[in-house]
Length: 361
Image (tube, rainbow, N blue to C red; front, side, top):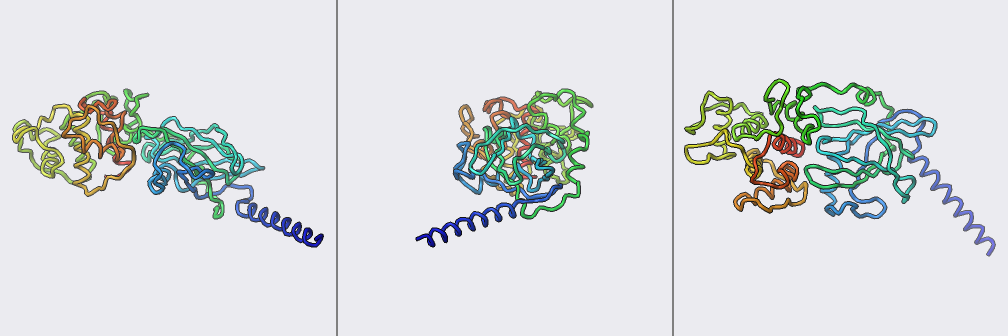
């Protein structure tokens, strides 16, 4: 009997030692700066369940996480202190970001302070830095996602098994001063809810300002303006003349109206009229963007929950639902789901930016 206990004790001890060796060797790295891969999880790694009431579709959830968290991060370990710098993408679509780290496996999460080291309008990203309790600690990230119109919660960690010594590139990028872009010159978008989206679409050359220093984000978007932006988004060489009697072919939007009408993206208000200077409504904008996606052979995917359709015109309902579930329109960029209200330049900038973020052109 003593021999049995002695063997069990030896086995237990060897198991503990083996586990300890496996844990330390799997994640142990020497002091230094390393580039590592990030591993995301929409479900709580401890419970296997979602924590934000969102979809249980693992593929959709993982796609959402990966669209926000860059696949690489930089870890610096020095004298037992671990600092991580990670890149958050689609930054203009995010707000109220909260980060918490897990103190130990299956342990509680503690919210941490983080520093935004650099924002880039051209890549719509931000480099964020904070401390980790260990190199393999899980990170809980909560944020409000504008295209989805709700808060989300997901998890991620660093895989240090293939850590590579950093060449300092990420470090150089994160200390670079915030770049000045075309969108930075506007003085009337500071603190505007669509500021980041406006800068993104202006920097892409899709929108122009209403003056050298103003964008007029709350000005109504006309039908002529809207098709012009879509034509620029398409990247096509657009020319031609419009056949509508109320479209002056010497005006900037004329070839874009001809292009959009020819390709079934936008119809006239009658067989002879287009009403280029009439404001486009939020529901009309949604329909036009869905038709544009069809023209470009882009499959709209489910990126968000189905939007409210209270007050939407019956003829527009199907495409409004498509645009909402695709993450293009939100409660914020439809004036609180007031679909028949005129869309502003800020609203459309947000819609176009959401479209680019999810579907490119």
